[in-house]
Image (tube, rainbow, N blue to C red):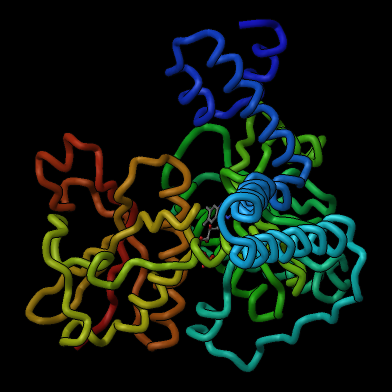
Length: 397
Ligand SMILES: Cc1cc2nc3c(=O)[nH]c(=O)nc-3n(C[C@H](O)[C@H](O)[C@H](O)COP(=O)(O)O)c2cc1C
């Protein structure tokens, strides 16, 4: 590898390195490193969201030209028309979003009149923010939510904190975000602490949604070097670990075409049959229309609409019943991702807990000994599913 290639390669994440390490041909490897490096440069400088369509645009344009000169003039004009519309949309996005030349936008309305289930459906990942900073009262209310949620009883022992950054950091593909909550846990890995990060941050996100604020969880799409450089003395690399960030602000109606498509694709959810099972074998789904399961229908739906990293939807619920009565739910992760699957379980915990509060069903989180969780030998050997925590129903007859 040349010195330049080595320098570019050293900035890559684990995913990019894994792809490049598989290439044996030197020239090809060198070319791929430079191409990926260029893509990452565009990505972190906030240009990729717009320029990603340039190859498609060029392709449509060339097909239009081929039709014009060789096949059919009328069809050629239709194809060239499509290329022109796409070109104008990219140009408009660059002017209004990248260069922020646009009409001022109003603060979105609050959602105080909505119940928890409405808030769950109203929360979507916002990937294009207004240029306006949080108003002082919104900022204060948000910080109150952070303090209150951090002060609640926890099921983990690791010290979690949230640092606030009011400056742009390098994130993908979100645009114009300038305010972030950074979730920090102790450097030493403890799975339950990461689950708790997900649980607490989701409570803050729901409070923000009630306030009419837009949020976007960002994990793999955040450049950690840019986060730690913004944190400065508030981050101790010996003791701290940045788990993820959450962009917060006011939702903009100016959304780049790429982000519109990306967000729509990322919004699809698995059906309840694929998420809730009656045993750890996960071979029989529960019948959510029949008792004793039907009573929790809105809780299942709340978990179904929980956010997860790149919409991986890695959590499953095992609904344990005894004598036709539900006694507990075990939250399991179906991938071995150490951080993002644990966060996803934590987010489910909040959605489950708050939905049960609305349904007036009491319960509490308990981490049962692994021996009490009925995993088969092959599941244990596979390393998945991973048991995270249970919600034990606390109801007297
Ligand atoms: C832990 C976590 C990390 C995420 N990381 C990113 C990210 O890096 N970039 C991004 O655009 N979205 C990210 N998301 C948002 C998911 O893509 C999003 O939640 C999912 O696609 C479902 O869409 P929805 O939030 O609009 O319902 C993340 C979500 C979670 C929970």
